[in-house]
Length: 271
Ligand SMILES: [Zn+2]
Ligand SMILES: [Zn+2]
Image (cartoon, rainbow, N blue to C red; front, side, top):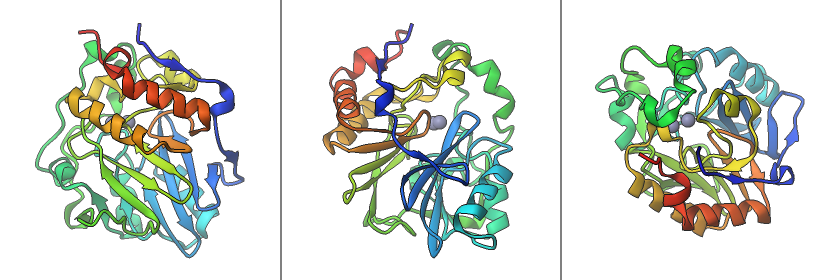
């Protein structure tokens, strides 16, 4: 049985918006598409989509964007925390439809330019969720072609003023997280997650918990530990992760520090 840090429901943060998203701030919201969160950053005058959900999510995501940002509106760009199948499912459809660039860390580019695929997830580490998800795996390497761009070397984030990107590898080589100092908010991707992701039951129930990165896909646990330490050291007030509800407050901070301190016991697979 996985070790995790159970969270009080009062740590769950956000307000249900009329467009179907959960709003964290006037210019920040997220929506769970099947098993994974997509994040909307910005206002009607300028906005960005962070991650694109599993395959089949495009029309739902577009529907929220139209309500949130206006009908003919399109983002400045799409930004990826990393290139795993559950974060790039609607990528091609959305990027082509909006005709916008796609930003990702250069170390993720081989997984996005058609040259290579991630190794298959390890079903023995993950447990019951893999058979559920396998129809969603891409059958060939994803290729976003000439839309692909590298995140700027100065750590600014295109279309996301006030945010910086941080390289938080481990779960994927070019995994990045985003940090906004003004309201001490992290968009963590899968560097750590806030619900169980390793059985169909956990995915269904979405109990708020503090977890290391999803085990079935994480190849470098030393890097993953350092990434969690780096994010915990920021002492964020609010976190939005790739899987699970947004969390805020002292209980979340305590749990994140506990995860960083006892990472090997809490996050690492037993094998
Ligand atoms: Zn992932
Ligand atoms: Zn994920």
